[in-house]
Amino acid sequence: MSCSNPFRIPALLLAILFTADVAAQGPYFANQPPHINQYVGEQYPDVWDESMPIERMFSAVARRSWFEAGYLHWNLSSPGSGNLGAPITDVPDPMTPYQVFDALNGGSSAGLGITPSARSLVLEDTSGFKGTLGVALADGWESEWSFFGTEQSDSNLMLDNLQLGRVMETTTTTTTTTTLPSGPQYGTPQRPNVVTPLTTSGAPSTRTSMNAFVFDNSYQASLNTQMWGAEILLLREKYLPGGIFNWQWATGFRYVNLDEEYAMLGTSVNSRVTQIGGDAVNNIYGPQIGGRASIQTKYVTISATPKISASINDHTSSVVTGPLTLANESVVRVYEESIDFSPIFEINLKVQFHLGKSFTFFGGYDFLHMFNTSRPNHNIVYDSLPGTGGTFDPNIGQKVSPKDFYAKGFNLGAQFTY
Image (cartoon, rainbow, N blue to C red; front, side, top):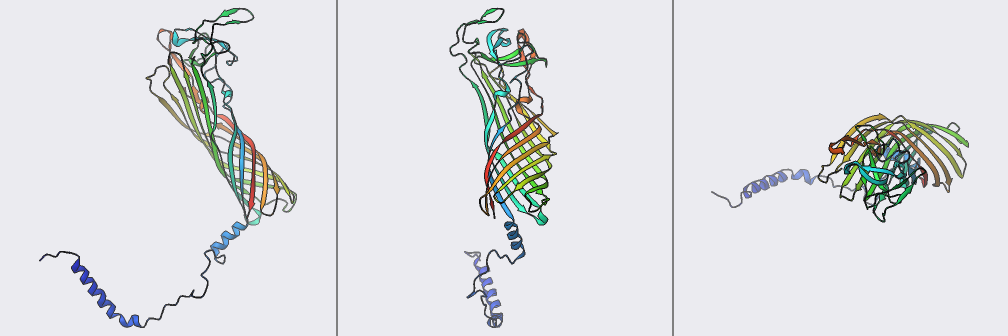
């Protein structure tokens, strides 16, 4: 026999069994005492009850805590000295126009050219934020938990329309007069070309024999830098509690991330486009020690907090090239990972104005110096190999060359005490 609803019979059997079970326990349910709501007529207990141990602990910590929020206005270190390219043996100042010969164009004269310096990329007026949570511990100890971060600082060198207004000119030196060839592709004293020199098989050359990328249309170089970090600092009890002059030893752990990207783009009249770039990510962390000297009065506190960290730098660097001389060249990326010892020295100077029991306004100066960081523009190897017909084959590579990095500037903010 078939049934239109296959669940009807099982459901009926379950209903019969449930009814029988309830009937069998009827006297038990009939004699149960009524349920009394113990909060009827009373106030329900508070969600946060300080009589309980966990709530009591957190309340005690909050009463011993403060929070500080500050604005940072820092200058970051520039990429350093040196050319944005390989060195030239007989040109002491490549930013002064010098005679250029284009090996990619049969070694013919390209007029005058300059090679930009890495100092042209300036990382100044960088904004940031720093927050610190302080908690007073037992026996006069204190702990500080800090985080800071900066915006991305961008530095750009742009030289556009290099051909604009070029005419045949005559340059005069102390010994000779040279007539430069005319044409939009020839650099002049007022409108020089931009040159990226290359070594030849690893050896630097003179200006007349060097291989180089010569850009007679436009040139752009950029560096983008951003950093952030966090630290934990434990401060021992003050040597003279309640005194005006004091010193506290400090120990802790810190982490700093420095992320940079460099890019260069040059174009020529003959539609040649050359792109070279790279990036570097520095992860610096380690234990630190230091101290805090302070002068404290009722209304003003002046302090200096020097620290040094025995850190390691776990960094990743890469160089990206392509196209270099031909439009159909593929993009090539070279990676390198390494770990170096990278100590950090930092000192914070601060003046605090106590405007009340719970509010303090402060201003100060920060100096942070990190050793052995990877910076992308310094990692690029500008090299070439001899080619056919007097030309050359670019051989751009990477060699990580650790450099120091600093951040310095002012801070301004407020402290709130619970």
